[in-house]
Each structure stands twice: as C-alpha cells, then as structure tokens.
Amino acid sequence: MASPTTPAVHYPDDDGLPMSDNTWQFNWIVLLHSNLDVQYRNDPDVFVAGNHLIYAVQGSVCTRQAPDVYVAFGRPKADRGSYKVWEEGGLFPQVVFEVWSPGNRFEQMQDKFEFYQTHGAEEYYIVYPEFPSHAAGWKRDGDRLVRIDDLNGHVSPRLGIRFVLDTGELTIIGRDGRPFRTATEMVAEQEAAERQATVERDRAAKLAAKLRELGVDPDAV
Image (tube, rainbow, N blue to C red; front, side, top):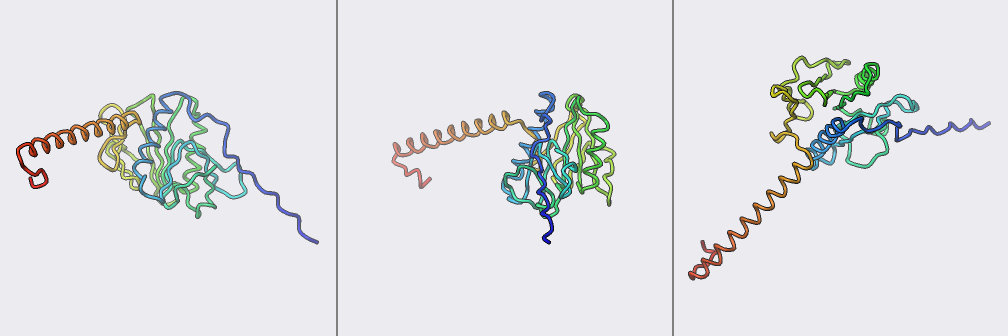
C-alpha cells in the first residue's frame, strides 16, 4: 500500500503585524536598510532585507521572527517572500537589527533575542528612536549572544560600521567613514554633485573657447 502523501506546509509571507508603530521607528528602519543596501550594492552575495520573515526550522511555521532589518552574507540578492533558512544553504542571517517601539513588550523582545541566539545570529542590535542616546548590542561567543559592554565606538565585525553615542544621540558611521544618511540627504548630495559637475563643465568649455580665440589648441594645454 502506498504511503499517504505528506501535506505541504504553507509558510505565510505576512505575520499580520505593522511594519512600524510611529514615524521615528519607521525612519530608523528605512535609514538602516537603505544605507546597508547601498553599502553592499556591488556585492551580489549579500542580501539586505527589512520587515521580512525568517523561518528557521523546516516544517515549523511558528518558529519565525520578522526583524526590522537583517543582513545575510553568502546569500544572493533576489526577491523572496520570506527567508527560509533550509533553502538558504542553512545560513541564518548574521546581523540583525530591531528598532524599539512603544508597542514592544519585554516578553516579545526576549522571544526575539532567544530566537536570534538559538538559530545563529552573530550580531544583534537594538535601536531606541525615542531615546536617541541609547542603543544596545550583542555579539556571538560560542553558542551565546553576549552583551557588548560599551557600544560607543563599537565596530561591527561583519558590517564594519561604527556606533557613536557620545554626541547625545546615536550616529552610525558607515564603512566609508560617513554617517548613515536619509534618502533625502543622499538625493541632496547627488544633486549638489551634479550641479558642481555642471559648473566645472561650463568653466572648462569657456576656458577652451577663450584659448581658441587666442589661437591656442585647448587639447595642447
């Protein structure tokens, strides 16, 4: 007699929870995600995601969390409904960020911590938008995530980013030595660079025209 077919397990892509409770939390999630995405834009094997479900154990729909932001090294950039560890070469995302909101309960955050510790996160950070001078971090030591005593000046082993807290609010310095910037700030910088490039081109064109008036070949100067 043929054995009965094992029913397929459905892993929902949505946990039914909102991405954020307020603009402070949302802005931090976007800041972290966008800057890390830019930092690894040229690396095809670093996957950066936000508000995205991680399923850690095949067959267990309840063994899951949706970090605000995470980074998975060794995994290709590609759209996913969720991150299923057994379909990702067994690799759990190495770095996880949570952005605290008023709706978070201690028990909920403890469950998140236990999930990340149990399933292999190497680094775990919590940002507190309403308390800008505070942040917390843990890094793996064997089978445990151990609290980083002083996050001020700490450099993430995986990401190469640096946390600065001595200015009265959290600033994250990217691997390029520049602070994380909002999308608006990035666009403003790009526009300023384009304006400067236009000025330089116009200046060069005027100089070339003047040299020709004087009978000088601009290419020979």
